[in-house]
Image 1 (cartoon, rainbow, N blue to C red):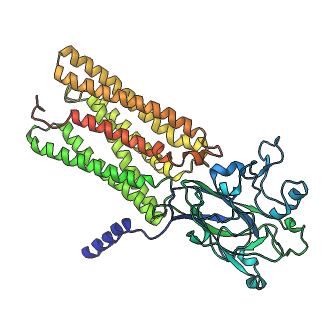
Image 2 (image 1 turned 120 degrees about the vertical axis):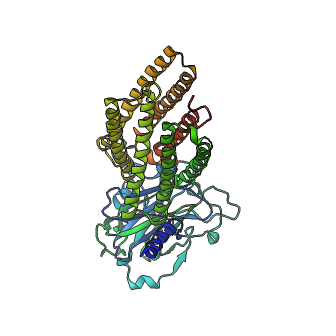
Length: 511
């Protein structure tokens, strides 16, 4: 029985360090209202986007892949007075008759480039796809062509071997992707391309990439009498968009920096714990009660950082699941416990426990209640900030997670600073200079921390105030993890190290 438990534990632990060749994957489905899937990507010479559709998908679909910096060229302005939809994005028969696009572009996304800019200088790839369920046996006899550069017509031409654009660095035959289409005889150019294999779009530049799709009505084919009309007006399709980044794993590019960040924090806290343990062992007979509390907090910090790193490592290896949700709750509990314990200890120290007064009396109960509330709200915030999608979540829902925690945090900070001032005044009146110096240094550390928090609060508020803007994700995907997690964790580390240094074990503790 015991051996079996150890075996299961070993399997779980080993799964945290084992990654198959996988990537961040997002489902694509016809019922998706926005019909646009985007993600940041860390790029090198082997990164790509894979778009695949299930065999049951039917109809015809306009598709375009591009980097967000080129989004301004997608679509053509046809009604500048329309606040919500000033552009026409897909070339239809009506758009051709109004000279918005040409007959060769029928069914494709419209790309409107300024004068002097060529398609080879952009990141666009577009096509009108015939999905698998509508393909007939006759199309199997059509000649097939391979290579993103050759097909479909209207896309960038193959670059020469001397081509040095940051988007494309190799000739077509050397690019590490697979894109196979068969051009139907109904369209001599810009035609309908049967989807036969996953579309692989090479990514050679770090950026924010999108796949956009659009329903293409059969009426776009009225300019040619040879086109088939047995296609549903609205296509039905399911599939996946796979973003293969520089790293192996299923995390989105915006979250992957957390893996390395929490690994580094684990090493730092472990090294600090070793140094603290050595000081405690060296002065074991001089330890004060506050140093026992600090020792417990140091141990909790090491466990929390390791758990946070393991959580993101697990997400990267296995993706979101019931296990990852349980893992997230455990990490959130540890994080909330660390924060609550830290503020509680600061508060009782600021109140002068064991320095100015022997007991806090009923005030201790109030401190415990505040710490308990901060612990509960911290768990809710920790779970919500990971599970919620900032771009799609209303401000009211976000405030429900943020405001309670902000209240308890503000209560702690105000109470700590007020009590610290009172304790400093008492020590100054008693002329206890050594203790006074320690508490004054603690006061300055907290004051600087609050000042930094205020600055970052303003910066974060300005950033998140634009979360509903169309380009918010494209501009913030690289630094969002830092605004939500990184800077706060780093600030805590610096403040904790300074405070622990003030109350470190030494030969003069009792004095």
